Amino acid sequence: FSTGLLKVGLNGAFQTFNAGLAVAALDLLRDSARFRKLFPRITAARLVRGLTRVRHNTRLSGRMITAGPGRRVLLDVAHNQDGIHAAVSSMVGEGTTGLTVVFGVMKEKAYVPMLKQLEWVADEIITVQPKNPRAARASLLCRAARHQGLTAVEGGTVREGLRIALKRRRRVLVIGSH
Image 1 (cartoon, rainbow, N blue to C red):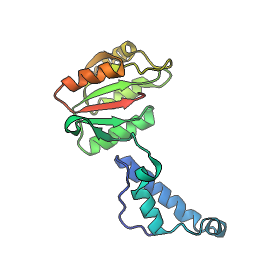
Image 2: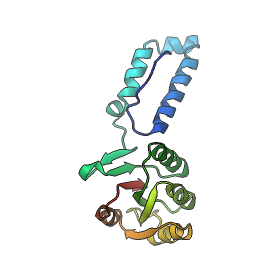
Image 3: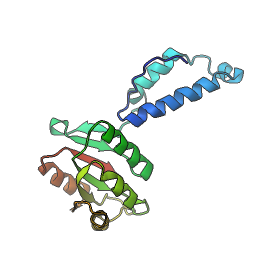
Image 4: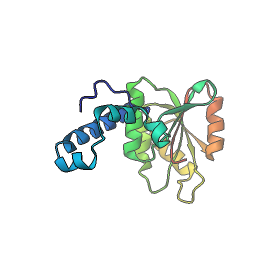
């Protein structure tokens, strides 16, 4: 496919990378006569339209969404090491640092490496406990963050943690399992 420059309809630099992988895969599949027979309507124009309208077409959201007063709250559903890495890499690449981070996650997740990744964008981490029986306690996450040398505050529930974060004068990132 020759798509030219492509604007992906999802936020985050990693989404452009993912879209590039999808385009490359389709390019390889088009070499197959069977694929062309099964999917004759896939054209470069339709591919571009689909990728630019992906949020509208799929209702997919939760990645690098801005919200709140003055659009100073970033929301991302990254809830594992790879997702946190992708989100943090994107933010660092865009110069988005110095954030108050509201972070909660399930207890079976590798939260220590996630906290280490968040250090790249966080001035402060407010740990929260999502309303889920599998959730890690906010106190456990707070201790782990402090053990890593991070400035951390135990925020209680997600709602309480967000209230605390909004009182700060920084941009807020809500990330993890919420």
